[in-house]
Image (tube, rainbow, N blue to C red; front, side, top):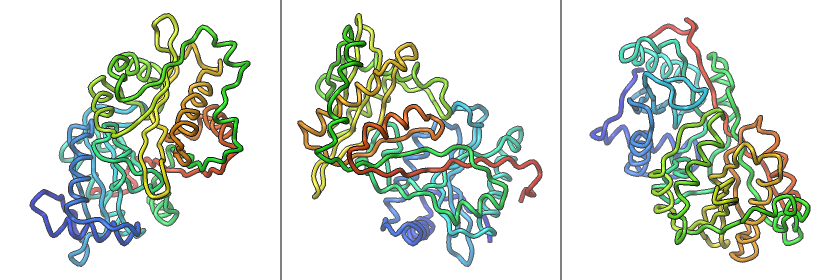
Length: 352
């Protein structure tokens, strides 16, 4: 058993990784597709060093993740080193080897951070580019694998601890659910000086700087936050084939916004509610629910969106979760959780 570091020349290893992914997630993918996904994830990472690392046993990949190494923290509340795109069978020996091999590499490249810990998700997001802020490819709602209990159990047996759960709500609309598409008149009266403006690909450029500022101010204190740039928002808007948004403006100041990406399959139009934000001084006034209901009215009534996902929400953000569940209670919905684990060596494992 050994640790390998995949390169563009390792055609055989990428083939093995594609087979492992397919067998563990029941989703087919080619070697070239998984290679492109992993390389894109490395390219878009904010970390300085991003290394695809794999454990080989009997000439086959049995555990894999992308190891991220840096000298500084890029995400609020998250250390300088981490992992993503974990693909593995739930085998303690294999995952132990992957952790030890990664710690050894960190010790070699950035020894001051070898005890800083590793943080990352255990869901497999290789096929789902919606997790990338630039939307360089079509997003794929509803296909993100849930946390695997067996894999979680093995990681916890090795000393990993739960850091956060990110929550997604998957919703199927019912025409009787008027709560979602009709704004509360009492709340509207409180916000009567605020103008609500529909956003599309055609007019978003005029508001990009304000949306970016609102996003960064709204989320700067949240766990996992990293600053967004106007360039990133512009690229996302360019790369998404279709989207709608709603912004709230008062005295030429953007107070809040919410966005939904749209696509279509054999079942009809579907969406993913993603970027959102409300300035701190305008929270708890009902602005967020009004933005949601106004956007939902356009999506559901005008564009006939019947299915969508709302993501990502931190599990401790109870106010947001309660609000969304209240708005969606007239339809059919369920939650999916995606766990973020942290591991702090503290001499629990020996460096390989």
